[in-house]
Image 1 (tube, one colour):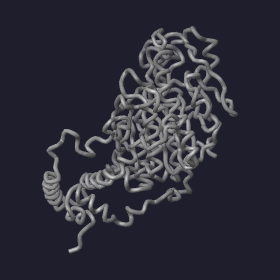
Image 2 (cartoon, rainbow, N blue to C red):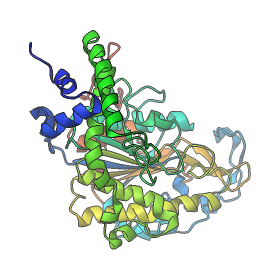
Image 3 (cartoon, rainbow, N blue to C red):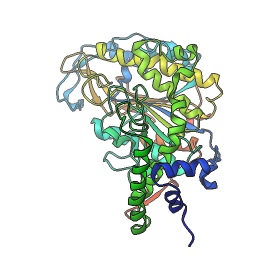
Image 4 (cartoon, helix red, strand yellow):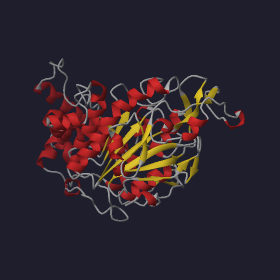
Length: 469
């Protein structure tokens, strides 16, 4: 009787040990041969991989990249109550930025003083100045920016890219998430979900700054009871259980996902220690990312790890700044002057270093870097304090690298930074543009679910062509 590949995997030793043996002996040609750049699905790709930097909490555009002289003129004036829409229900006067803005680069881009290192890279960057959201609440807005929907249960962009384009290699996950060392963002792992896509496409979470970045990949130091003999007994039991389950259930997606996770775990036991070992980098590279300073070390480690991951063929890496919650992130309700600078400092040198490092290694031409957040902040203070409330009306994002025109800005908000005014741009447009650069027509990447041809951009989205090279 002819055996399937899955049955052969289990019969060759069972469980993780069997999978590791099968991998070391060689897998089937479809899995062993990565598709490379692959020409894209629908047209020639410009980007081979993506690094997304996500500022969790709602980074203030008026205090980073969207210079508003009108706020200086109207500082201290009370806005018209009829024009105010704030979830906090309590607003103060218009508030100028406490930070100095200057023009930088040949393009003359205005950047706040909180980003001195990144300001030197603006000629490499295309800024989206009129992003807008359908909501000003963290959870739905974060879902929207990551999945294209304000409700949970839909696949994230990384999962769609994994599903559509497959892997560039077999030793590491296709979609990796590097959360802030202080904790997961709003929605927890819901931002990295595969939704109704096969579970093998969900984001693999790696805690880049932790002593144990991938929990349970190897036995812990205290697990002295785990011996080769006990491992063998456990694998025999696992083999027996999975064999019975495989015989009774055919085509079970959960079983397929579990087997795929075993396969990946086996391969990562070999590949992960090398890619996670940042001591292999030179002292100059580590300094470039800010690993020599406590305020930049965590985000810098994860940016450097992101470069190492894409260098080794990971397609999509998401690096988060800020956990969920009311503090230590970009949700600066109480004091922009006190709360925003630590977040900006922690990311400034690392993201500038990332762009410089990608260029020096020849990776910039086929790696797309995306900076995003879930919404912006109000042009007036919250409750008369020095912070700003949520504002879905306008916020910023930027793109750099593969297929992107550097030194340009697209769209504009109004004079106060309250609403997107010129060429409003939604998450659907950003997603469509990212997919386009990866060789994918966003209208044609679909998955049939509950009788509906679902896609990342739902029924919306246009490629933002003015920022393309």
